[in-house]
Image (cartoon, rainbow, N blue to C red; front, side):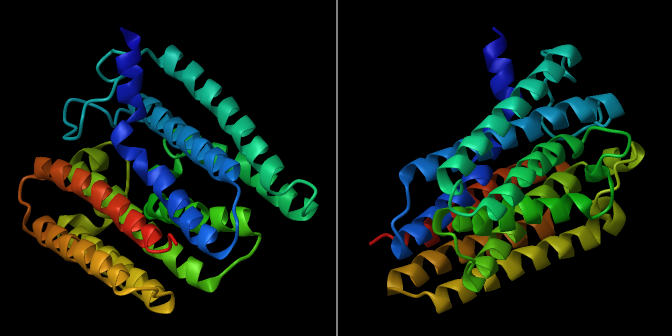
Length: 301
């Protein structure tokens, strides 16, 4: 049955990263202004479609370049295993590109149309940029995910700044510096997720011309880089709570998650076998989701 293969290709375990930042900004926005639930739902749908599009494109692109091979330590991909053909995946990429566009367009019509035409136009162009970037991470003559630092930068932009600050603006039509700090905190955690993935497959990526930050730094300094991005995320998250503290429970939730993030750093530093990165990757996805959820819940009145 093909459906289970498509579910595998969509990488369900990564999807919380795409909508948790949007949910976080919704909770904060709702505490400051009455926000349309329809806007939030359309935001989530658009983010999920774009994330699935990126995952399908990554499956397709890494198969074409040979990065997905028998040496790869991470989970086997559907094209690599022959479960989905290249032509089928190419059609799926086209379909999800179209779905992402229409979902994003309906979102903009709901939140911006007739309210600010100039901003509407900017976001409209942004839809195409998001779709293009989701595909170009792994596909093309020179995919940016294969260029040192570019993958990390775009993850910061799309999963941090766009996800939190961008959706906050759609909800409230305002920009806030404290939300920007929070978006960086979330972005750094997502960069950490990508970095674990890249540390795990460092050797195979290097052999196949995928020059990630981990390849450039080497495993020792990639671990230090990982430590840096997680600690910066914790600091920025704490700074946001300091600026917006409503109750002691916000600090309790934050410190609880921060402790687990520090324990995660310790585990990363001590890892010797690269296959053990898989477990820490899943842990960090969960911790990122819980971090965002706990901050957001603190704003529910």
